[in-house]
View 1 (cartoon, rainbow, N blue to C red):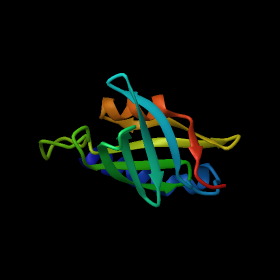
View 2 (cartoon, rainbow, N blue to C red):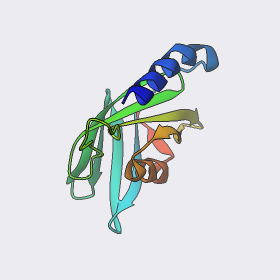
View 3 (cartoon, one colour):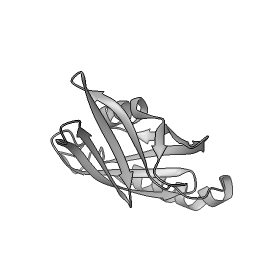
Length: 130
């Protein structure tokens, strides 16, 4: 937990110097779950992963600072939640970039393999607003 918290603090301190952005405005991305269509949606500091039938698979929060997107899983049957105080799988750090109206994510640090695969397979995300 301490290692990731320190990494998050460092990212927040250096990000304004490393990349000027207009802010992460949210987005929607499509992927698959068990061979069926599913979606990720980022909006107003919260994200959801849900099936085409609107079954929620995971919910969480996100904050954006510069080019970094820090996501935290909160609930859901497929959410990455720690079963021990010594794990920190709830939190993932991604680098985001907007290009031609789409948002692309790359992993900076995330111990949750399922979330990594889901986010990266859903990328690029369609922006919700310009």
